[in-house]
Length: 623
Figure (tube, rainbow, N blue to C red):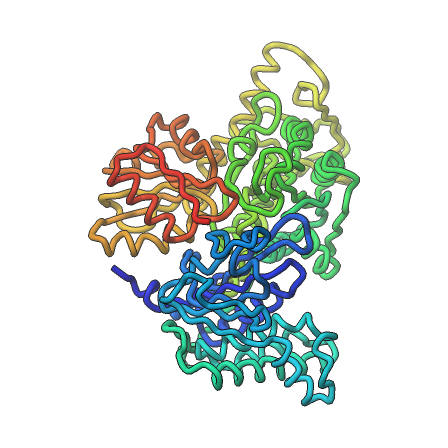
């Protein structure tokens, strides 16, 4: 049974070689959709070799909220043979399930270059429409209007815009919105470049409408003007970067690594306006230690990295914890591992690593963001937590979030509040009575900012007494361990519940789904489809991994009838964490670890299989 979303969405995919312009086409198209009042979700899949290999960009749009993609494609736009047939082209064998044609939904359409001269029966599909468009010929028609006829080879990179124009002409979308998006994208560049692209789109759309009578069954239209709501189109790295700057970030350190580098580059581009310095260090060891030093100096400091880079940071994390530095905040963008693994693919396999990143027992906070809004909120509040509880904070993010585009409401900056925590205020500045590591019931000692009269202190990575002097005394060791670890209990009491977990849907349901991170979007969109099949469902999204909201999670799972865990890793790491803190095991697990994000239909199919076939574990992967 279809839902309102599945009936009204349009899934558009463009594929081609990396460096062939698919990013530009997809993001211009997404911008045009947003300006038409539609909800948009888009994400890209690409190889780690930078240039040449096959990549594809999915753009899904609907007049109702959309937070995920489906594997079905309603309009496929191909810039090369591999988009159509996958790696089968190297073996001279057609068709192949490795391309994208097999994913086109019945009634869908395929736009491709007529110069490839492919016989339609080679596609092996008689339930979809094929639209061969002579990309260079159409481009030449556009160039003739600028007196550049016969130069299409010179501008061959514009094939992507021709393909985009043809597809938009076929799905019936407002062409003027697309043209406005093109002009805006070329703002600040040569006017001629914008005009060339506009003419190419117009020529391609006109060609498609005149040459092909039968259109794809799925069409999409802009909403009436009164219904349009001002939204922004934003990527995860941008949401995180903006939040950090609004939080007063003073120093960002990093060593280049995918996908975290994009966030640091974005912060660097905006940093001068916020008095923020971004430093590319010689390695990740320097990155974490420089950030720890800056935090001790009273500067809000962060470092961004991915799994392989974080592997070099444990000593610095432990150093920050034992010296009670107010931070730093570590932004850990998860990708496929182990080792360098899948540098440009997504995964949720660093949870246990983030929970146990350094020797010994020590306090630190770990929070996992599920979407743009949460990434913004977590990124901002993480600096408040670092200052207030004087601990390192890890914000767990994912490559999928980093490079995905979402339509979102503009963040309400008026609600943001900066909390620098407890600062030392000497009663008699001329006296030397300050104890940086003074024993307190809640574990938090007033910290001193550089230049504070009477606030000079010592600290060390060895165990130390309240004055910061090295000691191995038994009573002191016990007292200092209890003092530091008390911070977790304090944070657990004070951090608001919405940052810890959220139960989406009814309080009681036949089925409870449990997940974290970016599985959120696919799960929320899948819930309506599961409900349409006659089953009530809710979703327990866990955000705060440390300190873990054990009592609340235990209560919710204790009342649940059937529980299914959904994670993007091999071992079900959240499930292990839940079991550790609550003693409760999940009846079923739906896991994915092929480096690609969950699609909405994979959630539905995985849950159905687990329950109907009574399987403890189901692995999903749609090629």
